Length: 372
Image (tube, rainbow, N blue to C red; front, side, top):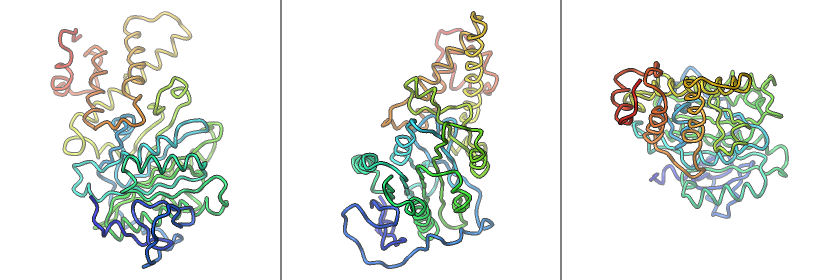
């Protein structure tokens, strides 16, 4: 539980508290009592000097295997989600906000909060967000900014600034670790508002981790804004129409998704010793399986080995990527699911995993199955 010190936070428009709902101007709209204004925070303030930042570290667990297992979010990172119209990015954003925690290996895992800015959404979506967060209890550690589609345009620009100013106050004044989710914003905003600079960790203080959600018109990755957003962030999670049409939630496409900061932030005493090897093997086998499936369309018949990888690709999507919107998988559960799926492949094909890990994690699962 958070102490009162972290529950009553002065913000850009009066006293902001965790558990409160505000509009894009920073005004309370949840019907709760207003506290006296104690201090104001300038939402146009210059970002903290980059040279005072520490390297991102620690692991934010979302309970979503396609993120935690393959593209872990590092504390202080900027991890973008790329989507397009018709995909469930708002549902995914809400799930991340509900389930996100600092990994228990982080010494300050209790000083964690979420600032969620839902921008340009419908009244129905706004009501669903608030009701969902209240029902699950996640609103207690969240500050929720809501900008409706019919609100003034100026508020659409103000809402992310309000959210980031609040996050900076929580992180750099009160020493908290804050996850900021911005759904949905234009890729251009990260430059025009210097939003990409408002993430990171400060020496002796807290951290801000950004998860902006960009919706690309027509899923056009040739759009220069896509390249700009990729350049300014530390990784991306890409949602797929193909997976969505197959009924897979969350429709995270493992192939273009990546986390640039994960390599030195996972492993023994951080996540688990086998995590990196497991990611590499799952990704390699999935890529091969997808290539085989594409070749099948052209060439028809497959050799037996190719059939195994094609089946693995389907199982990876159906058992590893797919999960319920309210299923909060532990990191242990995510890693174990990965090992379970690898039992479909002959051990001779597992050339990206150390022998010690195969002995420890895979062979006990194989039973009487052939090991060749």
